[in-house]
Image (cartoon, rainbow, N blue to C red; front, side, top):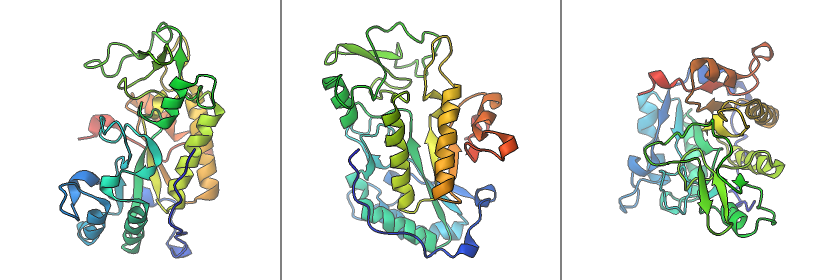
Length: 294
C-alpha cells in the first residue's frame, strides 16, 4: 500500500488524567458533511479549513465528538458520496490535505471535542489502483484482492441490497474476463478478506488515521466482509473474528479509541457486533440501531 507521509503529530499533549475509556457512553455525537458545512475559500465546496473555523460554534452547541463521513480520495468521482474510495490514506483535494486534517483534529482536541471518521471496510471504488491492477493482472500481487469467479452462480442466497439499481451481486469485467462480487453498487467491488494481504492493508490504513490522532471509526458495511456458500453472506463468524482482531490491535496500541459498527441488521444480529460479553465486549464499542435512526 502506498501511504502518504502524515504530518508529524503524536497528540501526546493530552493529559493522562483526561483519558476516559467510557467517554463515548456520555458523548453527544454530531455528524458533519464536510462538503456542505463551511466553505473557506469561496469555491462553493465545504472543506476542512472551513470546518476548523467553525469549531467554536460546534463547541458552543455542546458537541462532544464530531463524526466525519468519507472525505478520502475518490476518482469515481464520488459516485457514492465518498463511499467509493480510491485511496484510503489521502484527502479529497477539494476538501484540503492531510495537513488541514491534522490542524482540524488538533483544534477539536484543544476544545475538548473528539473526532471519529467513517472507514469503508467492505469495498473500494472500481477506480482504486488495487482493482485496476487486479483486473489487469490476475497473477500479480493484487490479483486476489477482490472476489472473482468464472461465472455468476455462487452465493445465490445473498440478497441484492440495492434492488432498484442492481440486478445481481456479480458484474462481468471485460478486461479480466471474469465476474467480480459486490454487495452494493457495481462500481464498488468487494474486497477479498480471505486474502491476508487485504486484512493487513485495512489494519494499516486504520492505524494511519489513528496515528494522526483521531478517536475512532464508524466501520461501514461490516456485516458483508466475508462470503460463504449456503448462507446469506452476512454476519458470518469470519467477520466477527476479523473485527476481534481489529479491536485487539487498536486497544493494545491506541487506548480509549472507539469502534462503531454500521450494521443494518436485525437487533439479534447487531448485538453480536459488541463481541463476547463475558470478556467485556471484544469487537465494537457501539452499533447503529437503524429503526430509531432519522
